Amino acid sequence: MIKIPADRYGNTGWAVKARKAFRCEIYPSRDIQPGEYYYRAMAWPGSDVNPDKGFMVMRICRDCLNDEHRMQFDVAVNSATQRI
Image 1 (cartoon, rainbow, N blue to C red):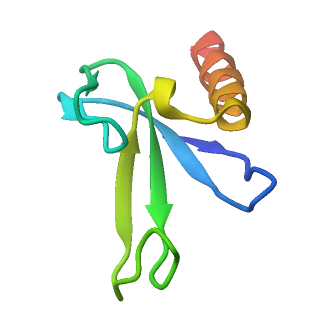
Image 2: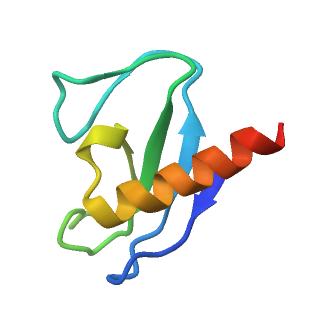
């Protein structure tokens, strides 16, 4: 799990390597395959995305990230995989 820096809106998340297949929660027709990195976002309670009282975890494929998050995601994943 790799921490991604916050964007200009304060959204933070993690790059996570999938251990099993998932569907992207932005576009469910897109799959996240085992071994691929995806963006794990936390939707805090009471936010516009999550009006409930509990936390909500969202799995988002790289292609569905906005340009700023995609750039940060790529830098974090590339730097982590080069260290291995």
